Length: 116
Image (cartoon, rainbow, N blue to C red):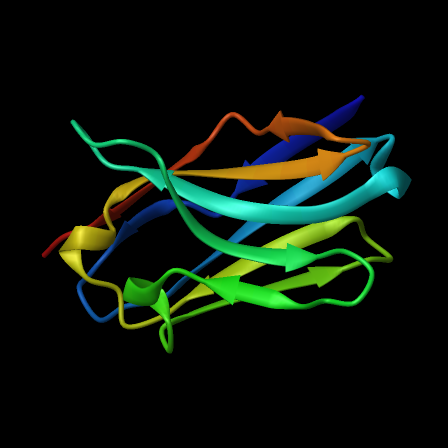
């Protein structure tokens, strides 16, 4: 079992920045990759970015390339999403997920609102 807890969401002005964190506990040593997803009101959940746990290879959805940076600190079992140049369309609940031994675990989500 892997438990995930997100933090760092909030209200930010357009073009502002936020950093989300996702702390893993439990059987976190078996994690192979972690991801950030988001779900806006009335829309399906979408993948934002992924990072492999051992090597740190990354993947980004096209709309966030150049604005978001995913990273991880293996010593703290924590993943981050640095978000810059935020747009109103980035408003969503952001969820982290982890894949461990072919199972996917989810956090509870954190709200990000980009508005003036």
